[in-house]
Length: 368
Image 1 (cartoon, rainbow, N blue to C red):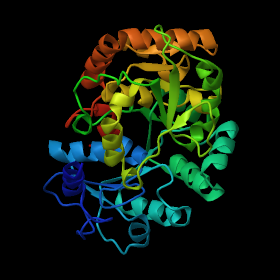
Image 2: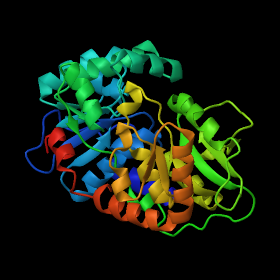
Image 3: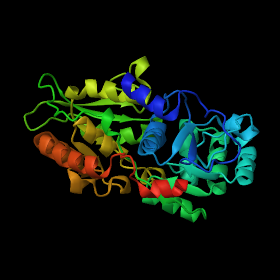
Image 4: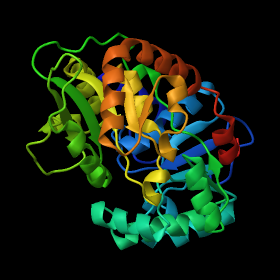
């Protein structure tokens, strides 16, 4: 994975800011697009890799623009003198205390500001859930201020676009996509020894969704009476006897390293699951788990919620909220795993992969 990190670093710059440039755009050469995400030097949270840096690398590779990560405080106060034709800011990566200065500079220099959000940060229910998980009031306020002031807003789902429309904000949908180089294309043959394991991975905002699966795995066996165990990666810090936990190594929190960790363990699992409780916050989420499990070579079983609408047309399996539906879908995944993964991978690689020069909606939002 170090080569992947090096490749991204070469394309987007090792530092947290672009090199100084004239204060006005050059009449020659492609536009300069800055981006603001958490992390630096190619090491970022998973959402930044998935939504921003992978696409920025592809944009630079296409030759349509130059790209550089921007230190938000230095750009807002003018210490960084680079003129940006556009600046894309993910979620709350621009500190609230520097936003007004950045907006004023953007207006003065004609810099297009693009806000990028992939979760519901706006409905009361969603804000309460985010506050419980990891977001303090200033972080939530930064997202709100940015989105309402931006020249363009990019979101990940149709439901999220509708959430913003209800707030009077127009946005464009650019769906999550995978970076093919991160993933293996080799078929997966699950281990035949011990219990049959099923993977559930996620962030702390999914702790409540985990509870949906407790009755499903209580005494669950497959068609051959082999015990089926749920194995959790992330999601919650709690430990309970009804599921097993696979700890992420300390060095695998960087997303490409995390993907490598998952790939090294794929033989452990016979399927990947994505439960979602019935609430507005979850309905605005994307089908990212379908993409990731598919590229791991695992058949997908998820809740029959708006987030996963349509994945059953591409090899995924959907289950309602009752135990029998989940167990039936999982048994189907165990029997038909290889065929379903083949269908899903064909779809994801053809229609949901980051490709240099593609994604016209995203480029239009950037103004290039």
